[in-house]
Length: 214
Ligand SMILES: Nc1ncnc2c1ncn2[C@@H]1O[C@H](COP(=O)(O)OP(=O)(O)O)[C@@H](O)[C@H]1O
Ligand SMILES: [Mg+2]
Image (tube, rainbow, N blue to C red; front, side):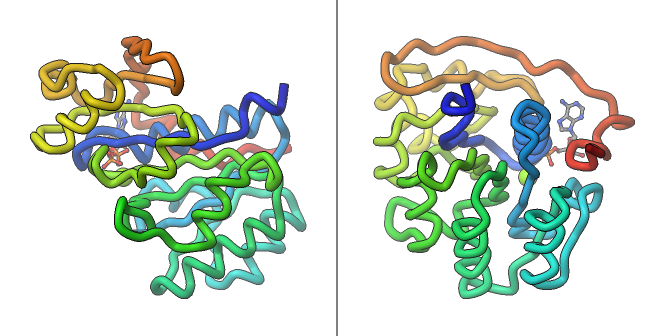
């Protein structure tokens, strides 16, 4: 059963469409099932991560997440720092990992080795990876080959829509027309697109996704 929560979940769409919020909520609901903590790479200092504990350095993050089993977020100072984060996750295992604005670390042209390793070896590391990105076109080819779960939010960029249509068969016109905070979910192999509007959540419960006490 734990097997089926492992893997990569990509959230792609325009800024403000609700990706980070959704990624954190999904990580939180998986965390409730597995008992494993959430650990987040807060690439751009997003407000959503204020609600889960922030760590100033990776030692503190590791103590918090794998020592005490609490949710933790880390804001990397650059690429080297992000690589060290992925190495810590690899060492720590058993976590629900949120990588916000993942296009900083992964694109069709280059990907940080530590992230690449996690994407290929999520079963071994026992992690779910929740990655947000502004465009479907940012997702590396290799990551698409792993039959990830996709959450497609509104997007207007023609090239991204074309690539999405090639890959999933979902028509660009449907993606352009998606209302804010709604998405299409699509998973892997068989090309079955399904429409699955998100429950609209009030601002009151937006501040608690990772702060689950156990
Ligand atoms: N389902 C929702 N219902 C109500 N407000 C939401 C919902 N999802 C996101 N928001 C709010 O909308 C804003 C943008 O959401 P965010 O998740 O940051 O988008 P993105 O990561 O795509 O830029 C945030 O202020 C967030 O709190
Ligand atoms: Mg975001």
